Length: 465
Image 1: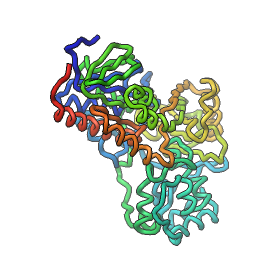
Image 2: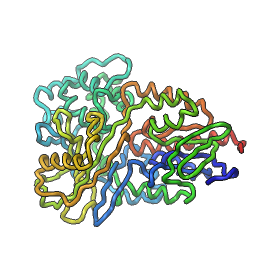
Image 3: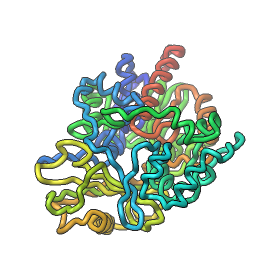
Image 4: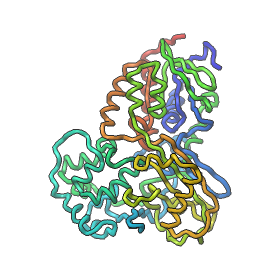
C-alpha cells in the first residue's frame, strides 16, 4: 500500500504490450512509475506455453519486419540476435470448395498485381480473374467519406475478389467483418494508390520489389512471450503489480487509483487497456470521453493448438497455413502449420498446428463451451489436412473482446477521443483499441505515449501532494 510520500510520476494501467512498451520508455527516461495489470501475468494477448519440447503461442506468433518498432525494441533489450525468420517456402493458401489454393507470388495482400500472377491463380474462376484484370480501367472514385473493405474491393476488383481474397485475407487479419471494417483506418495505402494512380494494380506494380530473403516476419525461439519476459526483466521489480485490477480512477490535482493490489497516486496516468475498459475507468473523469471510448466494437476469438505425430498428417504442410472465406461455412477463420513456419516448435517427428475461430463474422462462436470449440477446430483440420487419429494434446486460448474492430467511421470517433483526452491534463491513452493494431504498432504507440507523458511532466514540474 502506498503512503502519502509515494507520489509516482506515471501510473500505467494495463500490462499488455502497449502498456509494457510505455513502462519501458518511462524507465529509460528515469521516471517513477507503476504498471497495474488486472491479470496474474503480463502480456495481454501475448502468451507462450513451453513443455516437453513444444513451444505454443496462444496469441500473436510473429513480428512484422516492415514496421520496425518491435525489432528495434528486441535489439535494445539484447534479444535481437535471437530473432528468427519464417521457414521456406513462405506459401499460404485460401480454401475454396474444401480444397486449398495457393496464393501466388506477385500479390499484395493477396491481390495479384501482375497479369502472370493472376493467370496462374487456381483460386478464382476465369470470370473472377478477368474482372480483377479490369481493375486498371475502373475509374477512380472522387474523395469521399470512409468506406468498408468490401465496398472498396467490390468496386475495384469485383465480388469474387471480395469473397475469396478481401474477406479471408484483408478482413481476416483483423478478425473482422469485411462489410464493416474501415478502409481508411486499416488500408490507407490502397486508397492512396487509387488516388494517385487511378489503379491499385498499376500503383503497386510500379512499387513492387523482390521479396526479402529474410521474409516479412520474425519471431523468437521461445515464442513471442520472450519479448514480454525481456521487458519485464529490465523494469524495477516494485514497478509492476499483477492481479491489480483497477476499480476506480479519480482526478483532482493528481490521479488517485484504487486497485485490488493497493492504492496509487500519480501525476499522470497512461491507460493501456481495451477501449471499453478505459470507458469504465473514465466515467468519473469525463463522461463524454467515456462514451466515445465505449462506442468501439470488439470481436472475440479463440486459438486452438494441436500436437500430432507427423505420420498422422497426410498433407504436405508445405507452407505456413491457410485462410477460410466465410462462404465456405467452416468454423475456421484460418489455420497455421506452426512447425512449417518456425523452427524448433515441436519435438522431432511431430507437428504443431493452430486453428482460429470466432471473430466479427462469427460473433457467437465463443458462446460455446471449451470442448465444443476444440472439437469443431479438430474436425475441420482433420478434413482439410487428412489427419488420422487423435491429437497428442489440444490447448484452447479464449480471447474475449480482445480484437478491436476499426469499423467505418473509426477515425472520426478516434479524432473525437483524442481531442477530448488532450483537454484532460496528465491523461494519455494507448493500445490497439485506439490507433495501433499489431505488436509493432502497439510498441511504437506505447513508447510515443510515454514520451508525451514525460513532456507533460517536464512542463508541469510542480509536484502536488
